[in-house]
Length: 95
Image 1 (cartoon, helix red, strand yellow):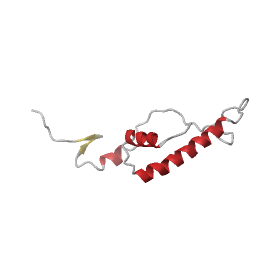
Image 2: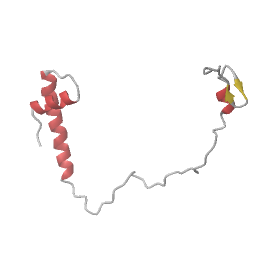
Image 3: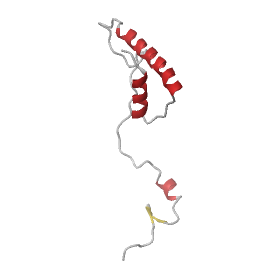
Image 4: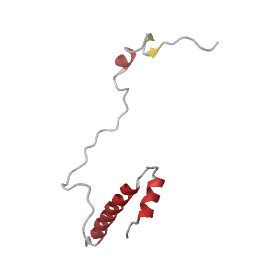
């Protein structure tokens, strides 16, 4: 696949990017180089190769799924101008 100047301008328009003529010409070459590299990658034989998420095998660290209040009630209420017990105190706004 090859990218031409019209395609570069169309992509820039779709991405809402202002591109000058000289920048578009430069980007044409860069995009063609990227696509050439991707085509090279598609030629690699990967039959029998298992997909991996990391180069070193590791187990995901997991935590217990427990519900807590965060133990931050006092810290949160310290920022309130007024509070009562564990609640914010605000003026009445509806009669």
